[in-house]
Amino acid sequence: MRRFITAACATTLGISLTTAFAAAGPASAAATHHARPAATIVVSPGQSIQAAVNHAHPGDTVLLRRGVYHQSVQIRTDGITLRGSGNSRHGTVLKPPARKPHTLCTSAFGVTGVCILAKKVNPKNGAVLRRVSRDTITGMYVTGFPANGVFGYGTNGLTVTGVSAVNDGDYGISRFVSTRTLFAGDTAVGNHEAGFYVGDSPHADTVVRDNVAIGNQFGIFVRHARGVTVFHNVAIRNCEGILVLDDGQKGGAGNAAILRNVAAGNNKFCPKTKDTPVNIKGGGILLLGATHTLVARNAVSGNVGRQFNSGGIVVLSARKLTHGSNPNHDTIAANHAFHNRPADLIWDGTGAGVHFVANHCGRSRPAGLCH
Image 1: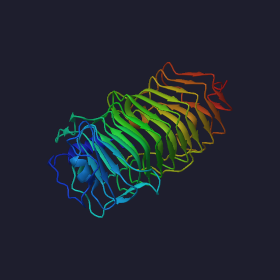
Image 2: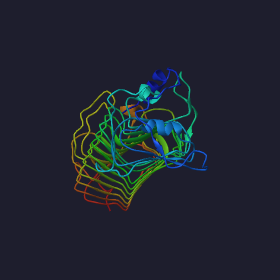
Image 3: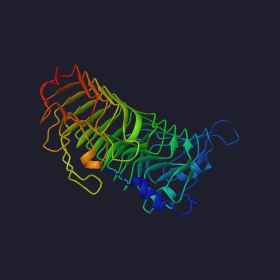
Image 4: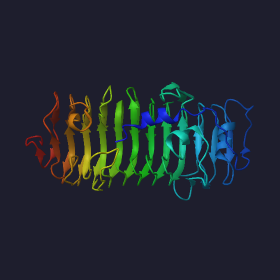
């Protein structure tokens, strides 16, 4: 379950932190950089997005006109807005370049559509020494990248809105070792791992709201992070709709609020891999070792399978799978869960202070959790 990405970063970040970019063509400026506090740099298909980003100052907007761009972009400057002209195939479309870009992000994490990377990183262990802050990615369709669609590492105040991430090789829209993130009004479809991902952040202070996740491995995945609100999202046809996981690292996972989401028909089958050591299918919402987490007023239906994660709302210990925690001090309240199999509510009986309150459902394991 991608437990090793931080270690991988530590290995690959040993390269030089100085990167060079080749421009694919000139970009036109609607305003000069002397017009502070903000300028807009307009980029058309055939011109270099990276050159425009490199030229931008904090507060500037790089505006991408409609069309297809076979490019990958890296942002390491505070306060940049990368704004497309629509998140459909008829808007601003970002596809992989013909040649692998020579950027730090590509070297560390693979070819990614938009990478927002910390200003300074320890090359020996990948630790973030100086975050990049207040960047915004909005209004584009990012598809077919071997690694990730939109990826943040070492960010503060990252906002991703109105972005579609489709059929990317790892994550759709994700952030690691970051804080104060907003993912809102985005769509993630057919990504090999999570559609939306929040990880490696003990003080995440992150909101994932009003998004749609379809046909990914995990619709929304919170791992080794605390302080996450997952609100009013739709997760359908994934292998698991919403997952909060303690992967065994210090600090665990939890202090999350999973509120008013729809998790329905997440019946895609995902066979086990090196990163996910078990088969998964048919899971609505899974707390695996999560602590101090509230799951409330969600609509969970039609999630059917015979794997460990299968069922409507499932609360399990992580000790056997990841050497993580038992699910302590979690509250499952006022959810509607029907037509899930093997049951609508499942708890393995581990942990302390786990409460099921006023849930409307048809069947539970153990019996008596439905009201």
